[in-house]
Length: 353
Ligand code: FDP
Image 1 (spheres, rainbow, N blue to C red):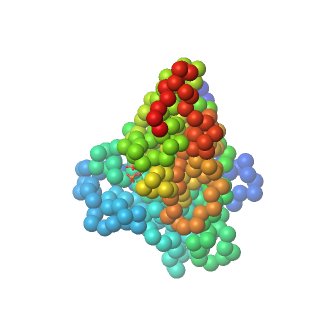
Image 2 (image 1 turned 120 degrees about the horizontal axis):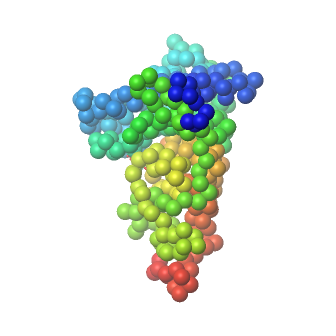
Image 3 (image 1 turned 90 degrees about the vertical axis):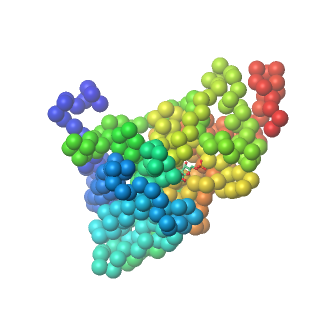
């Protein structure tokens, strides 16, 4: 971007979204405005995350959320912030949040609109107290009910129907990454002017990476295909760039963001204790799958493309394998029994799994 912009010329996210909107003459501007609303929420949450530790906001509340996890104060703050930034605008007919059991209806005194917003207000929240990167993830659909208040049916659409998705990560800087189906674009927040500025235009994920990201503490409960795949990644073979390096933040949004930029694979497999794994289809898997696919990558539950899964429940979980096209293809082959470890002596070591 340095060559494109002189020092006084910057591309704010508003200007970028407006430019993108002009490419679609049929656009009414409502989606753009909804994205601005989400950006505002991200800025407010970012400000609060940056103050964590200074204010009295750190630490757990006494309530347990729908997923059975202890809610953190910042979770609650982020959940309310997103809702309050969008519910009054007349652009949304219904919302669903990872933190809420049921859909969130638009209050009676506000108009309803044609979009549906699903969000995970603060992903990776068990990391908050350790100052580790966390983030907000969102997903936008068109409503399928005709008018009035939206229903759960509006929320339970397969991921390929998303018309927008993104996340904001609160890391060493705050960054917002989004797609509306025309590539993936990243904006870094400049706190001195209060704006997200274009820093990563048209992000492309490498076709193959060198990093795998998974909670290996769960190894003993994994199914054979995943065990073999991870062993495969750890073997030495120069021709296929192995062994891979392991990296696991434990905040999905941070692990996926690194995977988007550097390539490789992030996975949260199902296992013998949790057949569908831990991550939520609607709030975590679908939006990141849309982004990764738009960047040229791939996402799968091991046997099926994530975006093709027909959801049955708001909070359903799914195994997730996401990242570089080549890497996800190989794990699918292991899971589906189409590939196995090479017998010892063929430059790879056999394992007992
Ligand atoms: P968290 O529990 O901290 O909110 O789904 C939530 C999530 O974090 C993901 O962000 C993360 O990838 C995963 O759970 C971590 O789970 P493990 O601790 O089981 O590895």
